[in-house]
Amino acid sequence: MTAGKKMVPTRPAGQGEMTDHTGILAKTWPQRDQSTATTINPPLYKGSTVLFDNYGEMLKVGRHEYQGITYGTDRLPTQRQFEEAMRELEGGAVTRVFQSGIAAIQTALLAFTKSGDHILVCDNAYGPGQRFCQKVLNKYNIDCTLIPPSVGADIAEYIRPNTVLILLESPGSITFEIQDIPAITAIARQRNIITLLDATWATPLYMQPFALGVDVSIHSVTKYICGYSDVLAGTVTVNERYSHTFDSFYKLMEIYTPGEECYLALRGLHSLATRLRQHEQSALTIARWLQTVPVVDNVLHPALPCHPQHHLWQRDFQGSSGLFSFTFHHDYADAELAAFIDSLQLFRLGYSWGGYASLLTAAKVNRTIPSKYDGKTIVRLSIGLENCDDLINDLAQGFTLL
Ligand SMILES: *Cc1c(COP(=O)(O)O)cnc(C)c1O
Image 1 (cartoon, rainbow, N blue to C red):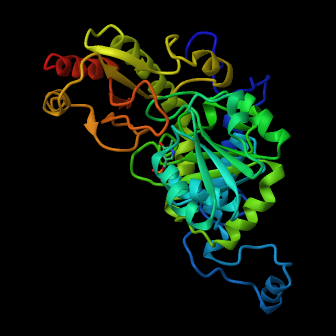
Image 2 (image 1 turned 90 degrees about the vertical axis):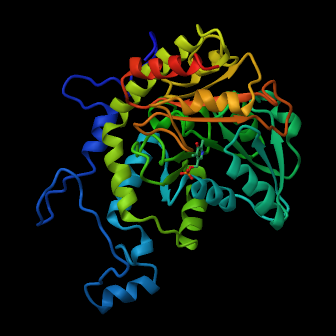
Image 3 (image 1 turned 60 degrees about the horizontal axis):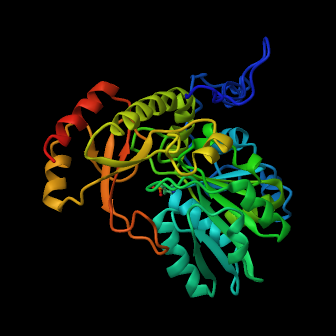
C-alpha cells in the first residue's frame, strides 16, 4: 500500500465487528445444520442429476414454484457460495460465474445487445473481447466503435442514437491507461446506455465499480482471485437495474462452470488480500527500481506519479496490483530481446498473470487508434510472490546483456 491509500477492507471495523472482507467470507461456511463432517472449506458439489424428494416437488418445477436446485446447470451449492461471496465483495445485485474471463465478457455482451445496436469498446480492452465484438457481434448486425483508452467525458462524441453499451477496462492490462469512469458513467446514465467494466487488474478489493456508477463489473477470476495459474474462471456482477435481464439470460444459456473451479475460486478469495498486498509492494519496488535503469524508458504503472492518469488512479482505486509494463529507449531486434528474456531465471514466459510465479510477455503494440506506444516493444511483468530482491537481481543480470 502506498501512504495515504485505504487498506482493504474499505470499511473500517468497529469494536467487536468484523471487517467487510472477513465477514463476507466467514459467512460462506460452515453451516452447522448439515449432518456431515464440518471441514474448514465447504464441500465440493458435483452432479448432473439433483434429486427431488417426491413427485409433488417435481411438479412444482413446471409451475415455476420450485425453490430448490433442479439440475447440474442450475448452479450447484459450490458455485452459489462463490457467486454470493463475489456479489457481496463487489456490492452488486447478482453475480454469475463462467468457465473463463472471456466467456464472462462474451456472455455479458450478448445479454445486453440485439441486432441493430451500436456499442463502444475501449481500444485497450482485452484483445479477444474486442475480436468477439468485431467478428461475432458484427455477424448479428451489432456495430462496434473503438474508443481511446484514456476516454472521459469526451465519450459523448462517440455516442450514436442506437448506442446501447460501453465496454471499459481500467487500467488496460498492457498499456495501463485509466478511463475517467465516473465521467463516462454519468453521461451513459443520462442516455440509458449500460456500462460494463473489466476490473480484473484491481480485483474486487482495489476498486469498487458500482460506486463509480458502473452497471456491470467483470473479472477474470483466473488471475489474482485464483492465484495459482491453474484455474480458468470469470464473473459478471450486475447492479439491481440490470440484474433481471442478466440472470434470465444466464439461465437461458444453461451455462455450466465446473464445481472444482468454483471451489478453488472461493478458496482463493480467503488469501486474496494478503497475496495482493505482497504483489503490490513488490511490483512498486520493482517499478521504481526500473525507473533508475538506464536502458528503460517509460514505466507504465498507475501508482507511479509519472503515469498519465495517476490522479484518476488515486481518486478511484484503493491500491495497485502486481501487473505493469515498461518500454526501452532503444528499439532492440528480436535476437537482442531474446538474449535478455531467455537469460531470466525467475520471470517465465507465458500468457495470463496474477499467479505466485512471475511472468513476462513482450510484444509490439498494435492499436487501432494511434497511440504513443505504436510500434514500440512493451515488456509486461506479472510480479509474483518470489523474494523481491531476487526478482530485481534476475532482471538486473538480464539488462547487462542488452
Ligand atoms: C485474462 C483476462 C481476461 C480473460 O480471462 P480468461 O479467464 O483468461 O479468459 C479478461 N480481461 C482481462 C483484463 C484479462 O487480463
